[in-house]
Image (tube, rainbow, N blue to C red; front, side):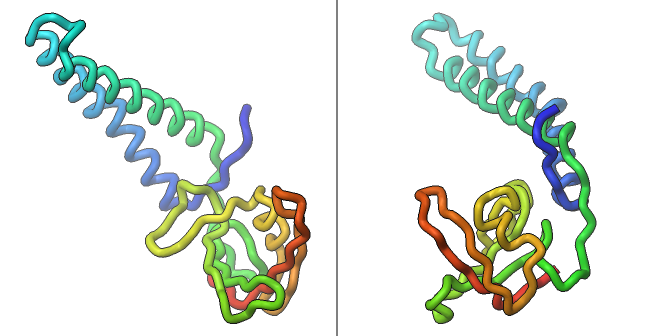
Length: 157
């Protein structure tokens, strides 16, 4: 089993709906496109056929990704604690620069919401801020090896 992906109920339901749509209606639609393109003749020079096959490949890749993600997911409930957890929206500022604030949703990229960047709880900064409270300053190593510190300015659950 791969890594467990923590998802909100809403994200899980949205992804399950996309998976169900792609494995039923999506596959039927792409099969019709391929069949229609085949009827146009020579497949070696048939742009419609190659485009439909390319679309089919992308769709099957998305189906495989969603299937694995849903099989290896755990639904997490929104927390009402005073500490950063998966599903929290956190406002941070890098040490020494409280004027430039950034807001992140802590969770899977599949949790993305309009107007918010997503930070993985397993990333260096994500794992450092999990469990922190408003007013805390936490340090972590960036992927480039630099030591960075961020202060938690606000927290929404």
